[in-house]
Structure formats: C-alpha cells, structure tokens
Length: 442
Ligand SMILES: Cc1ncc(COP(=O)(O)O)c(C=O)c1O
Image (cartoon, rainbow, N blue to C red; front, top):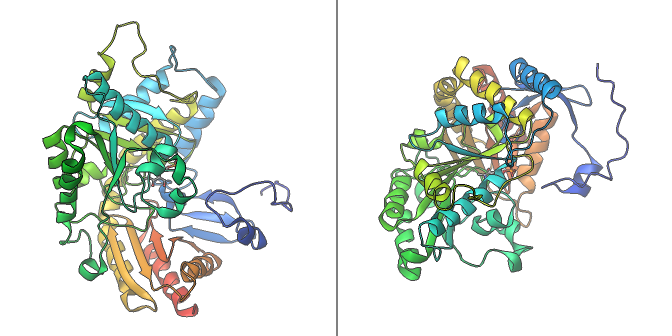
C-alpha cells in the first residue's frame, strides 16, 4: 500500500530528544496511522498509548481534519498575517476562545508549544510595561517544569538536562518554585494528592525576597507532563492564583499537554476551576496535524497592551511568519468541531475511572514505586537500575513497542496519554503489555 522506498540511510536526520546512535542501530519506524493505531514499517499494528506525543487527541487521520487540510491547501496555501489577514485565522481564534475560561478570549497564534511559552512570557512583560511597570521583569517557573526549548522556556523550565548545556545563556531574572513530587507523602495517589498545597506558599518567599514590583509572571503546567506526570496537590493551584492576584503578578498556565480534553474538560483551568491570566497551548489544538500553537490572553491583558499606544502603531513587536497559517488553523477549526461533535472531552472524563484502575492495578508489578494519574494521563515510576538511571524504563518502552503498544518514558518514569477515543479493551491492552514487559526486564 505504501509506495515509499525502504530507507537505508538514517544518517542525515539529526533526531530531536533522541539517543541518535542507539536509535539508528535499531530503528523504530512508523509509516501510517489510523484511529488508535500506528503501523510500523515492518508491518505491525502498534496501539498508540501516548497520542503521538500527547497531541493526537481525536485519534489518527480523522477524515474531517484531513478534508479541511486538503481543501485549504488547494485554495489558500499561505497568507500573511502581518498587516494582512485571512478569514480562517479569525474563525479559528473565535473557536479557540469559545473553549477558554471566561475572559481569556484573545488568541495569539504560534507554531509550537515552545513558541507559545516564549510568546506568553513576552506578553507578560509587554503588559507590565504598558501599565507603566516596566521594571517587572522577573519570571518564576517551577522545578521539573517543562516549557519547551526556547531560551525563555528553558529558563523558566526546571529540567536539568534541558538547561545545563545552555546555562550561560539563560534569562537572568528567573526563580523557581519547588516541585510538588514527594513519594513519602504522595505515593500511589489516585487523582490529586491531599498533601502539598503548602508548596505554593514558597511564592510568598520569592516575592518577599525580590519585592512584588519586580515580578512579571509565574508560569506552571497545571499538571506537569513531560517530567513524568505530576498531579497538582489539592488546593495548590488555587493558592498560586491567590498569591499572584494579591501582588499583581500574571499567572500563566502552560496547557500544551492538558489543552483540549486530556483531563475531561477543554482545559485544565476549567477542570481545576482556577483561571490564569494567560494559557499556552499547542499539540491537540489541531490534533497535531500541522504545527500550530496559541496563547489565550485575558481580555484585560490584551486591551492593556493594544490600547497603550497610537492607533496606527504596532502594539506588540512579536509574531511568526506562520502565525495563524491557513492550513494549520483550518485543521484547528475541524479538530475543535470534531471534539465537540463527538463529545470527546466528555468521553475522556467517562474513561478516566477505568484508566485509573487499570494503571493502579500495576502496583504489585516488579520495580513499580509509584503510580499517579488524572483524566487520561498516568505515570508509573520505576526503581532505577543501579548505576544506569533510565535504562530499565527504556527497555520496557522497547519491549512494549515490540509487543505492539507505544508508551513513553522519561528517566525511569513511564507515561501514558492515549487518544481520547480509546476503548476499554485497549486500556487493558496497554497496561497488560506494560506488566508483561516489567516482568521480563531485569
Ligand atoms: C507543557 C509543555 N510546554 C511546552 C511544550 C513544548 O511544545 P513544543 O514541543 O511543541 O515546542 C511541551 C511539549 O511537550 C509541553 O509539554
């Protein structure tokens, strides 16, 4: 069916976030996808336990999205959005805005999560400057946070390997809150841990250290994904919101993973009932069909920036050639329509309990030292092999792939985030395959 030639030279593609030599010695190649499954180049079906990279929430190659992309490609391949526009961009923005929490209805388009993060940080600085508080330049992230790979994102991010090579070039005025992971208190919690909301109080310490008048924004993932699924303690996000409001600090939720149904609501903000000032998103915004990201800004933030200068002056010197690319935004409209038509957020919510019990059933499997979950996300933390951190989880990942299930691993943590169309037997297949893999590794 697939007419592509067999690839025999893997040397030119310098692969991202990959052990290139290890991969190229034993490659895992996917050549097509449909619904819940990939097909590998050796002709095997592979159940997608990760929605690609936390992004294909509606399942693969959905006809409605493919049609929208194909149609748009043939009618408007590209149109600039600097001092020009096209209707699809405005329609997509309205659609995205309709799914955001009350007030966050001004949408700035980017091409990725990393760009969304850097855009949100810049909007925060522009907002304070427009208010006459341009000295508010300090940004606060969190240990173990992942905010993409731009210089802004790695500066506020808290994952050491992503930072250390570039440590001399990180943004200068950044602090980090403590992360919320503590197995002594939270191991094997189903849903949100009861312990840990006091960790948000550290923000008060940072504010006292620097003075609120210097602080622009706090950025956190409401549920930390890439570091290995850290679910926020009960009341934690509410506390961050209160402290930010008290000191006039903008709160940014990085919803690049949680955006669009992962927790059973359009956003994690809606799920947790906490409204930030800015939300970053990407990935599932258009089912990952074409690169697209966005920042939703509260109307007040937008209006403060946009109304600050003369009406004929550009207000924000920021944007990308492909901001609101017609094909990517057409894919977003089709995707968001599909989520609503098929009630996929509700579907995710309805499968969360089954997903939780299937994940936690692995509690007695070898090497398992923690299991955590919320919505259609779960993480299983393993004991590390002596002297070889990450090796055991890597082997489990490879064994699962060979057995027909795609999972993700980071360090010694396995992560699961399937498309929201997953069926019960597929949930069982994912965790059953993981159990067998755990029983077969050393
Ligand atoms: C919370 C969060 N922010 C930002 C990013 C970066 O997104 P991208 O890889 O599209 O740049 C990711 C990617 O996983 C993410 O999980």
